[in-house]
Every structure is written in structure tokens, then in C-alpha cells.
Length: 244
Image (cartoon, rainbow, N blue to C red; front, side, top):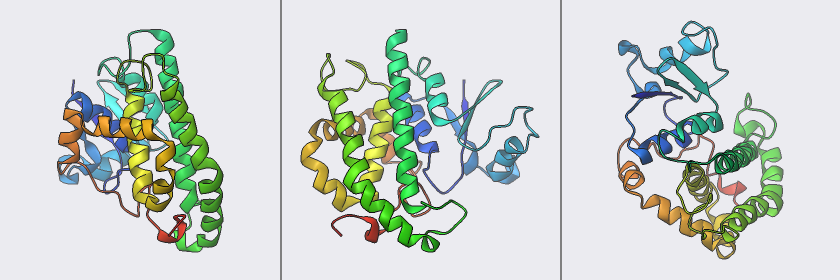
């Protein structure tokens, strides 16, 4: 099966969590948003689904994935669907629920990261809410960043099968998503993440391990990997980076 991923062009955004799973597994997929509108792709194809023209059950927003006749929305939902066919979850039900819970926690974290630079609302430009963003960033660096980092470091530390992976002795899609969050934080807040380095050795080892996987390494070196930028979730505004 060739999957079709629908996400906004020009940013990694939440679509990147799905791309990483597909790239890691070497699964064939079409990145619809990056295609040419003259070929029935690009933004018109996304709008066709969002407006309800392409399906009677339209998704609220990208990312969503088309797999045969199925249209699946939300990152955690998509990854839960892709996990078994892409061999990105163990073959037992308790582990699958555990991994899905980890992914939902990562989704919560991503929402908090986004809201640093848009604490009032997405309809306003960053410059229109910069003062509130600076207050939000201070609280994030003092309280929320250490809390999330400590949690995932603890998960790796207490893993009975060893600290190599989040879900046991097997690589899973939550490892890929944690990789993306840490890479994004290192882009957005290099000084803050440098200050946290000594407390998360197992997380950083996992990030290196994921980055060295053949499919991910090839993807990161390809033109398919869009760069981080100041239009996505992870934005580098020096004034929001503790230590800058």
C-alpha cells in the first residue's frame, strides 16, 4: 500500500511525526501537500478533504493519512494505526497501549511548546503577543521542560529491558517522536537544552540511536526533510531561550 500524507507544505509541523515513521520503515508514501496543484495535489487537495468534498467525514485539520479507503486524523491516532503494519510496536496489547500513552504525552508536550510563542492564540502574530510569550517561556524553562525531560529519562531508566528504547527491547514509533521533540527543542532553545544536557543522558543516547537508523539517517540527509523554521512548532526566537 502507498500511504498518502496530508499536511501543510513548507513546515515540518505535526506532519513530521508521521513522516518519520514512514521513512523509518521505508514505507511508500505520497506527501500530498508538497505536490503540484496542477496534478491534483498541494493545498487544493488538502482543502477538498477539510471542506468535506472528498469525504463525508472530514478531518478537522492536518495531519491526516489516507490508507486505502480510510482517512485517519491526529498524530497519535495515525501512529497507532501505522504501528502494526510498519513493525513499530511490539506484538502484544499491553505494550501497544503503553506506547500510545507515551505518544499522547508527547502530543501534550508539543502543544505546550507551540504555546510558548503563541500563548494568547494562533490568530495573532508572535510579535503581537511577545510579552506574554516571554512570560510563558520563563515558566516553561523553569517548570515544564524539566518535568517532561525527567519523565522520559525515568521511563528509559526504569525499562526492564534496558534504556535503549522507551517501550522495552524493541524500537517503536514513540522513540521516533521523542527524537523529533528533542531535535526541535535543540533548534528552538539551544541554550536551555544545553543547560539540561547532564540530566538526560539516556534521552540523548536514544536521539543519537534513532538518528543513526538507516531509514532516518537517509531521510535526514535528503531533500525530503524540510528544515526547522520560524513558521513551524519549534521556533528559534533568541529572546525566549533561557541563557541567551
